[in-house]
Structures are given as structure tokens and as C-alpha cells.
Image 1 (cartoon, rainbow, N blue to C red):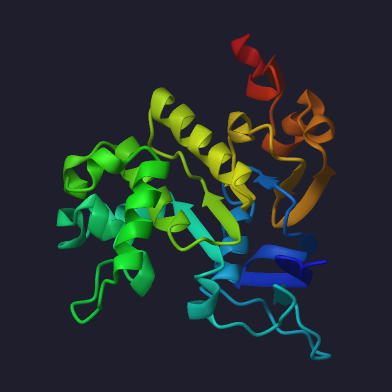
Image 2: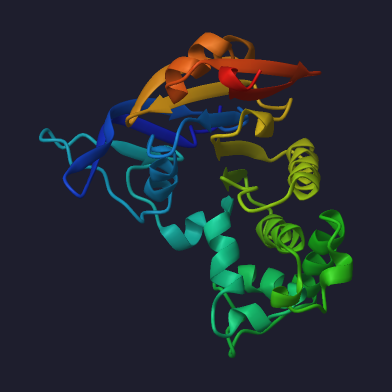
Length: 271
């Protein structure tokens, strides 16, 4: 059995004097498609920061590790990039809003994944295999027509397709989506999540971080509810996506609409 993607044991992360994660214990398995759902400030994105070493948990007094990734308490972030593919609104902005990155083409943005950079290194050698994989990834995400277009000339949905292509081009074991449709319109959100479903069916484990219940695609079998840096619910979508649980999670009465396996939540006062 493969090592768990992420293991937290009484993990605490302090930011600005506040516990963003508060003695959190949690195990995320490879092959188990999981959604982390909660309001803003719940600690969802902090889990991603632990994975990427952008943040560290408070060390335990007895020396036992608070965090393990793929079974190890020490991991090399550069090596990890080949195993984890992360798509987020912040990555989108890093490419588009930068002084030079926004003038990159879609093809160049995808190729940059091979160099673990936000742009192709000038001394980086692009092999024919890299070029072929890039063409495949753009085609797979429906972005082949964007290969020669500059990022700053694309719509938000088009850039997000390129970002997904950039992630899958290296064949990661796990796809991590951190608020992936933030800033996208209704059609672009739907199209992007359909591409995600396609990627999952190719054999990649999905970890979705969101506060939108409708982003929880049918392939997700586990939903973890986070609030105040702690787990307040953990189970199947049917068990977790109820009006009572979501009302407690978001702090207001919640009404639900269901379409097939999708759940749409809204404040009950809007019914």
C-alpha cells in the first residue's frame, strides 16, 4: 500500500499570534479523492503550505514529527514538485501579473514546469520529449489553440486551462486544487472542473480545497470539514453535505439544492 500523501499529528501552525491549525490530526491517502471544505480562515490553504514547506508546524517537545509527506518527515521540495501538481488562483496571478510572465505564451508557461520555475530558464535545454509532452498536455486540457497566445491576452478560464496543462505535463501522482475556480465565471468554472474530472480518471489522486460545495465532483469520496483550524466533520459527501452540518460550518442556516451528485448550498434566507 502506498504511503499516505499527508499525515498530521497534533499539528499546530501559529500566524500573527493565532493558531491557524490547532492540534490537527489528519491522514490523507493516495488514491482517495478528498475535498477540504470550510469557510475563509478555516486553515484549508495552510495544509497546502505545509505540503510545500511554505509554512512549518510547531515542533513537538518529544521530537515526534507533526507532519509527514509520502511517509517522510523530511522531504525535498524540488523533488516533491514532480509528485504534486498544484493549481491555485495565486499561481494564476503569479504568471499573469508578473512583469515578464504575463507576456509568456501558453506553451512557454507549460514548458516552465520542467524547470520548476515561473518562466523557462534561459540556460534550460528543451528536449523533444518536453516539447511532445507539452503539446500533449495542452491538447488534453483543450488548450492547444492557446499555445502561441500570450497569457495576458487570455481569459481567466483560458489561463486556468494552461495552468492545469502545466501541472499534468510532469505526470504528478497527486493533483492539488486550492480554490481553483476563484475569479472564473459560471461557464469557465464548469469547464475547468470537467477537465479536472478527466485528469482524475487518468489515475491522478485529487485533493480539492474549497468553500464551494458545487466544486465537489462525483469522483470525490471523502469530505473533510474544517473550521477554526480543526476538523469538525469527516466522512462521505452524503454524510457531510447536509444542511445541518453546513449551517454549523458556515454559521448560518443553509438550504441545499441537489442535481445528480452535485450539491448547491445557499443561505436559507434566499429561499
